[in-house]
Image (cartoon, rainbow, N blue to C red; front, top):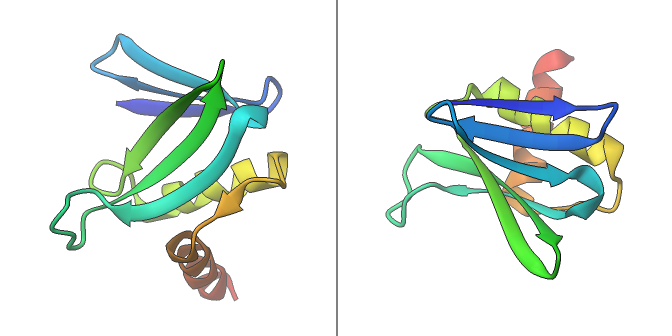
Length: 104
């Protein structure tokens, strides 16, 4: 599994199993959630990047089990910088603040 944010083309993609790729233009992203990966919650959480393409909702997820938390933070930060209209839920904002305070 790997993901890529092409800042020039403003496209986010994530590939699973070497061939299954999801892509979305940054301009089509409207919301980012940081929620439990599983219904029961726990420490497994995922960053859900949600957008609308051709009238259909598209979701690309980055679970913290496979992605380091600081990488998830960088993805959310970069996306927000490229598209300031993206809405962040409270857990995402808290995650960004947590890592921002670690920098200082």
